[in-house]
Image 1: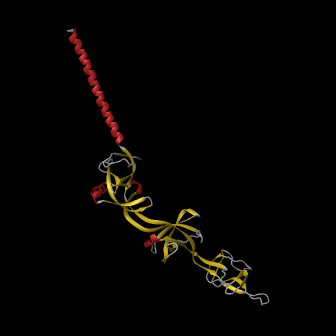
Image 2 (image 1 turned 90 degrees about the horizontal axis):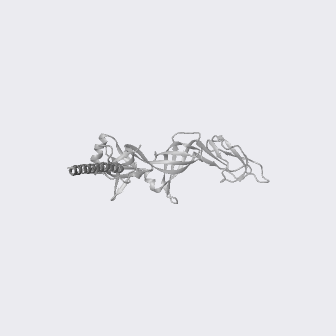
Image 3 (image 1 turned 180 degrees about the vertical axis):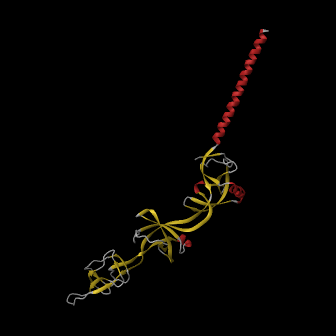
Amino acid sequence: MKNTKKLFLQFTLFAFIVLSFVSCSKNDSAQEEEEESEKLVQAVRVEALEKSDLRKFIEINGSVRAEKSTSVFPVIQGKIASSRAHLGSYVKKGDVIAYVDPSVPGSRYALNEVTAPISGTVISIPLKEGTKVNTESSIVTIGDLSKLQITAYIPERYVAFLNVGLEADVMLEAFPDEKFKAKVSEVSPVLDEASRAKEIILTFVENDQRINAGMFAALNLYLKEFKDVFSVPTSCIVEKDGKKFIYLIDNSDGKKVRFTQIKTGEEIVDRTIIEFAEESRAFIDASEKASSLKVVTQGFENLEDGSIVNIAD
């Protein structure tokens, strides 16, 4: 009887140990599965996929100059006896700006007037009093500074986009935090054979007294506008088997991603205009009606279609 009781106690203890072990194993297994599941959740960054307007542009350089300027030449050779022009002074058409002495030793002293052919500001006086001149010597340069323009040259590959009226943002070194507006007013009908570039003239939309002729201008010339289009960061586009894809957040639960095929268009700075392939249209149309789509912009390298993600702030 004692042996039977002893055996029963031993069996009960053994059964308890086994059950405890199994229970712990199940708990450990469940915990491991939960931890493994958490490891599979990828943290990502996203942005709303919305339609917007984009403009294709090129960066070029140009020079600010007076819209109208002319160099003034004497009508006779001699030497500059005196000058009435001063750098920056305003002269009217017909004003005397200098006298040229055409006489030679032994001849009668006489002065020849040099007059301004246009009204404007004296922007250059290359020759000083006493300098010998002829009919090809520029005495002063007069410019109409009330209207300034920019001369720039466009590479041949962009010539097809050129037309009068194109808009541009102008940046000047003297005012680095400002953008001035300009429009193309003239386009040369020919290309320069040496540079394979076409000259264009841009006129400032508004006159600004701070802008000076001779300034260096950096321009963003807008060649084409795209209205109401989808665009994504170029870096988030994935290429697979010759096709292009992006990862979109599936709006049905907000945590699954959809590997979505796209067609790419123009690349503007760091963004690419996209359209959705026919295979993706049903999903896109349904999602657009429900809420805004989100495209994964960072953390997509290890994702697959249907992956669970956490959206990082």
